[in-house]
Length: 379
Image 1 (cartoon, helix red, strand yellow):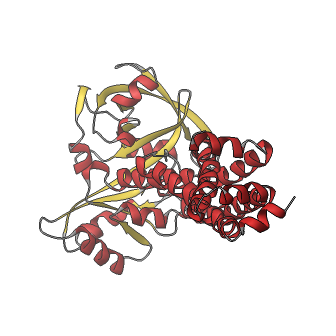
Image 2: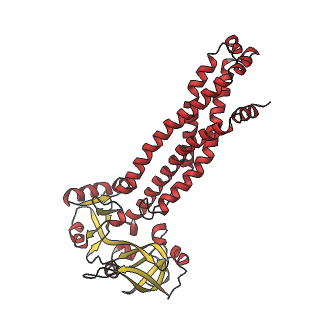
Image 3: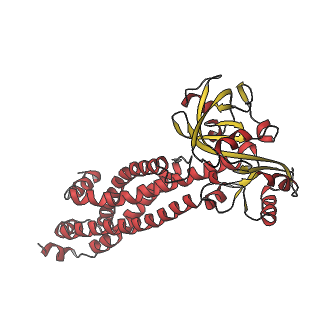
């Protein structure tokens, strides 16, 4: 009998116990995969938002729960333009709304003449007028829109009757930036979007380009020290710390993952200890016919790892599904998509193998301490 067949036979002696132990470990693996993929997704989205219009960094409202919910007065632009190291500034509004039947569509409001507007590369048509919009080439297919057609965009009426309204905007052009967030959305004139969203005189972020030779991080710190309530975000890691909704979910998830690691390890340990207890006589026979202690230990460790590899297969599926659910049902920041890199799956593998090795420690010690004669006497 081969080594693999021996391990399979031993694990299938108590199939229900093996399955339940694997299920427990798979929860921890799933949490690790989901959290890491979401963390990557938050960083990717933040990187796209803080560099809108090829900006060096962006200014956001301090204390916001989501970068897209930031609100800053547009009147700050002249003051920020005078700060040392600032070359150009541009107010941009990010408006998440319903366009036709797509419920989470990102519309960007840009001021004509400012650098994000100038850097918009059109592949078809022209820049939008007051009641027009240009869409990214990624959004063109998802909306089934066409150049010269119209899009129905949901907005809000002004005071005193603050209620939702729907307005039609003509598609004046198609653009491409290479940024997935921008290319899956649309761009219109800032004043038109402020009117549609009922945020007159307000922007979501103030994009900044710095003077050549000046570090972006240094300029950002200087602005933060002089203007209260402003939060410069120059790196994706900073955005994750700012986004309290994402941060709380990720922090809570890591706590649950640690608990899952402990519980999973105890579960594997209990399963293998029971297996050793049930097979005391068998282990004694193996020792009597010449199996060394290291081979007995290797058998038990292999069985523990076998359980955890089964858990890995289940856990990867659970993690992918959990990450999709978190992002699809608004449990994380808008426009965050999980990023399943090789590193994410490698951490899932490391977690499962770590649980297996941890859970095998006590059963291995117990098994190799059994004296062959004493083990053979047991029923």
